[in-house]
Image (spheres, helix red, strand yellow):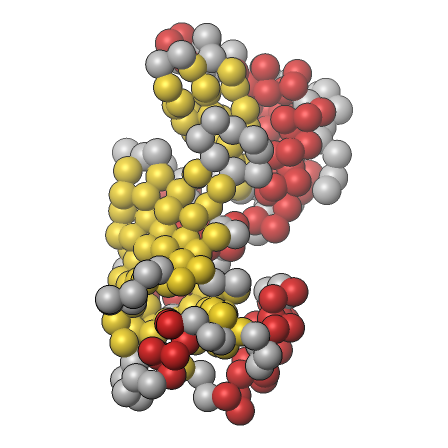
Length: 253
């Protein structure tokens, strides 16, 4: 059983995946899935979604009852590196999707932009329409399997404090710190030491490596001895795992 002090909770992992995911589709009964241009998971327990104003989904929800319609939002978290299998995780948020009144859409877009500045929010009120998905259940799937998470836990969870810089860190490690990646790879099980190794994910609790081997892809997580609480602590934790705590660390992003 993993030590909970050095392992992110499922709710935290869902939060991280939602923050990282660049692709999401809204599935409604009887129509093809609709790609979203914006998705933002709020702490109140809903997801603000932007879809094309002329889409079947926007029209269908706009004409639905005030109670909304059953829907599923599928989000795809891709690794920020050109890996053989780029998908790191899938998240399914099931619930009820409701229309946002036209008069309230710009104000809601402004609220979302305060924490999630996205250029597509500028389209709201023009070519994009905002919807709200009130979450009833959440499931996440990655290389470790599929897990559900309590919606109340999801509301209380926070994204990892390094979530916004993770992509830049991984790209920097892969491009400029092959020495540290190679040192980390020395701690892999013997059967995984024959493949090509890339950093796949990093958070305050540990780092995950992706091994691309002849027999397929394998992910291996290496936990830190304690959660990192600053960029300097995160760099030190990576170098300690690599066995070179006194070498020059990763540059600050």
